[in-house]
Length: 286
Image 1 (cartoon, one colour):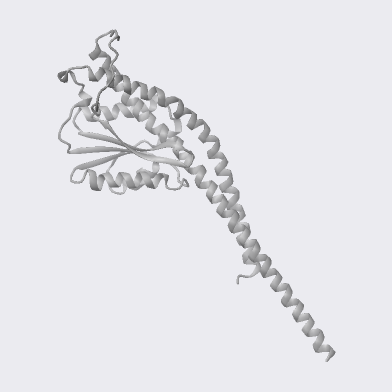
Image 2 (tube, one colour; image 1 turned 45 degrees about the vertical axis):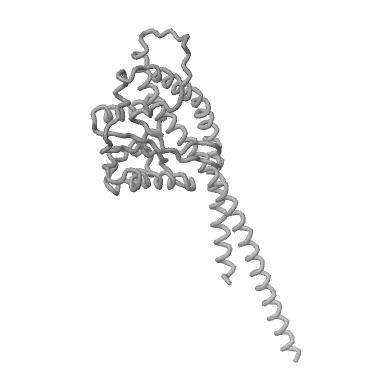
């Protein structure tokens, strides 16, 4: 059994760790509220924009397609892997890294795959393999639509110029503080509409329908990327809050166990001292 000083040091260390994890939990909880409100408010707009774009696209002729919907043989693939800049968030980052690696090894096996990292964790993981062509970890310092739109425009240019034949984004979709869903979405070319799409025949288009679609597509793509990063941002704080909550609970349990061990050891030491005193007294009497 460890001596009393060692146990006291461990109790002090665990208590300090518990204070840190508890503080991090409260900080993440405060940030989560703001991030959750932002993504919750944005989703209806993003979904409606996608619905409108699909409705308009469904009524266009096949030969009036956009340059962003061009299907070609997939040789070069670009994956936009969205993680966080910091750890201590449970499996939040590792799930993104595993999914990205799965796409590289299985789905896109035999193709040239490059990665654009949004978040230091994916950049640190894949830059060692020499496949990261850009790192936009600084986006979290000022997460605005305009800053994300600049990245989306760069992705659109790379697709239009033929540098990449397919672009996908991977991110954690926020469900609640304890649950994040790893999503893989095709960014470009635009996924064709599946099934029937309800089209309102009472629409009056000004300017032409084609011109409207050509303006909506870049807007929709920028919104799609922004929504993915916003989802990931909210998921990060939810995952970190949950992880720190569990860490705090574990630290509390360990501290209580150490205190019990300390009390038992202290009691045993006191008992031994009493026995030694009694034994000495008896020896003197004899």
